[in-house]
Amino acid sequence: MKKQKKDEPHSTGKRSEVLKLKLKLKNWLFLVAGILFIGLGYLFLSTGSMVAAPILLVLGYCVLIPVGIILK
Image 1 (cartoon, rainbow, N blue to C red):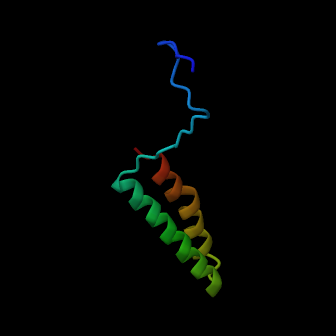
Image 2 (cartoon, helix red, strand yellow):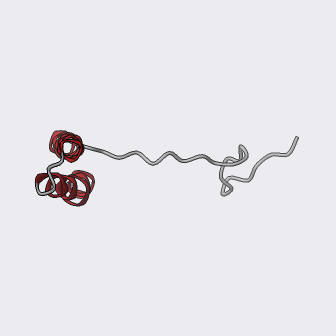
């Protein structure tokens, strides 16, 4: 059994790092609002509304979800 030198890091094979997003309450609110807008957009799309549905879908996918992820 070899002894490790003090300047070498502890070697236990591949190192797995998990990306942790630190989301606060306002982030979750934007994400939930985005999901609700997307759901309403698809609901309006199924009823034949060709004006409200695309607006809600674009707001959900392109505005609220990214803001919920990026905002600090």
